[in-house]
Length: 373
Ligand SMILES: NC(=O)c1ccc[n+]([C@@H]2O[C@H](COP(=O)([O-])OP(=O)(O)OC[C@H]3O[C@@H](n4cnc5c(N)ncnc54)[C@H](O)[C@@H]3O)[C@@H](O)[C@H]2O)c1
Ligand SMILES: O=C(O)C(=O)C[C@@H](O)[C@H](O)[C@H](O)COP(=O)(O)O
Ligand SMILES: [Zn+2]
Image (cartoon, rainbow, N blue to C red; front, side, top):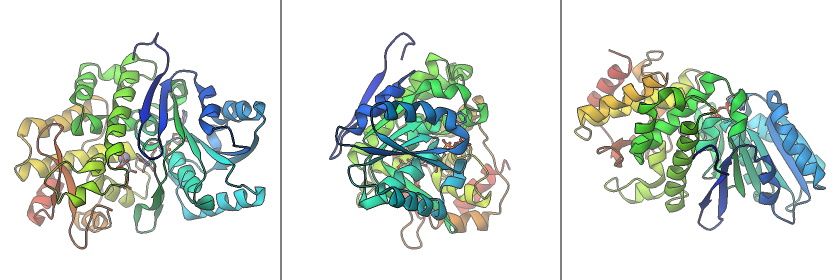
């Protein structure tokens, strides 16, 4: 996406179609996405990002909409039942009806919680997402997965609720801390491995550009990653294709969970203090080794995981929790069926498939590789 070009629009088809707009200085695209009938809007944002929410609030107010500002706790602290209850109470007090809507401004934690509030209030009101992290733009804000964590694990409560639109304003990335930008690259690289190897080439060719919020390389990575996500979710919004297919063919939406079975276990072991994209990076190194050991993936493609992730400063090893703890946490992953763990592995570059019930010996060996052993 060359710098001089205008915004790019990626259409998401299906029963509730919407657009993802990617560009710079495009905050004014929120209002038209809300539609004509909307009278009131709740804007949810982390308290620390008030400066990014304010222009959106002002724009909606200037158009005559009544705006209810709902500041949330920072980051993962927003994804709790208590925060959902507080938001529902605020909407109830303000008398929000089905002609009202939600707008989220923030990272993936904000779009997950704001999307969940929109999905559940009156069984669903429209939501427009304005992701302000790389990870939110390329992944969390697109595709309609919403939710929160429980004591048992990551994202265990939620629903599918597609947004009415997504506005990825690359200008907001200017204030994003470097480590947060790098974390988003975890999901970008994931898209490269599961579907679009050109992403890997771009990252490997110019790792400095990949982590520069002003670079055209990053803009192109956002565009390509959003396209990967859109292509997957339009075919399998509710993530049923992989199980229905018995593991033999493309896993449908479960492909987007590449690296996540271990990643979510690590995040829980770390009490959600590790960034999601960092955990996904480590989880991909784990799963690449499992795929290699079980005869799915060649040595070079498996090794490429750690080298590409390390090139942009992502972690590739983790030894903070014992195998037994991580194994127990992986069992509550949504891909599990009964006692059987199911993973997304690669049968080769950009060829995802499901691996069900791998041998404990292989899991332990992949865990040892992940520990850097
Ligand atoms: N629903 C999905 O499909 C999906 C996909 C991927 C990830 N997720 C979820 O997304 C979450 C991670 O999202 P994230 O990586 O965006 O983290 P995050 O939402 O926790 O944001 C990270 C930090 O950056 C701050 N921040 C955000 N934008 C900023 C900006 N422009 N300038 C300065 N600071 C800014 C936030 O306030 C926060 O402190 C996880 O909970 C993960 O499970 C969901
Ligand atoms: O959109 C999806 O589907 C994904 O799996 C994208 C993931 O990057 C994301 O972290 C998602 O929230 C994980 O979903 P979960 O169902 O494992 O909680
Ligand atoms: Zn993820």
